[in-house]
Length: 144
Image 1 (cartoon, rainbow, N blue to C red):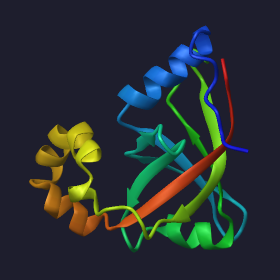
Image 2 (image 1 turned 90 degrees about the vertical axis):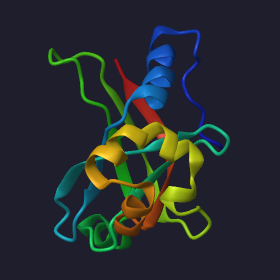
Image 3 (image 1 turned 180 degrees about the vertical axis):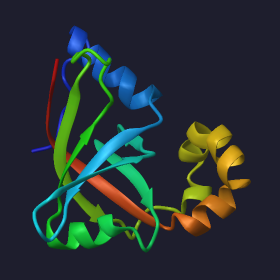
Image 4 (image 1 turned 120 degrees about the vertical axis):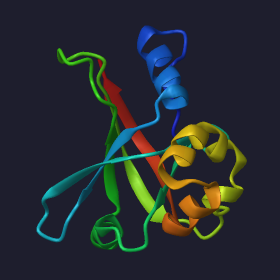
C-alpha cells in the first residue's frame, strides 16, 4: 500500500504538507548496531510523485552503517518549543542507485541554493561531498 499524507483539508494535514515543502531541516533517526537511536539533522526533499523523501549523505556517514543493520528510521521536525507542532514520520530507508547526483537534481538545488552557496560554494562541490542518495519510504505519520 502506498503511503498517503494526511488529508490536506485538516489542520494537521495542512501543517504536514507545508512543512514537507518549506522546511530545510528534518531530524533523521537511525539505530546503531547497539540498538541506540542516533538522531541527525539532514537536508531533505519531499517527492510527492513517489511519496518518498530524498536525502543526500556523505559516503563515510555512520547512518549508512546503521541502515545496513536496520533500515527502519524516524524523521521528525522541530517542535514549537512548547511541545506542539509535532510531526513524526516512520519508514524504511534504502540507498538509491537511480537518483541523480545532488547537483543535477534541479528541485533539490533550487530548495538549497542559498545554503549550498553559503556552505559549499557550488552545487558540484556539495554533490562531491554528499554523493549517496537515500530514499525513505514513509509507512506512518503522527503528530499534533
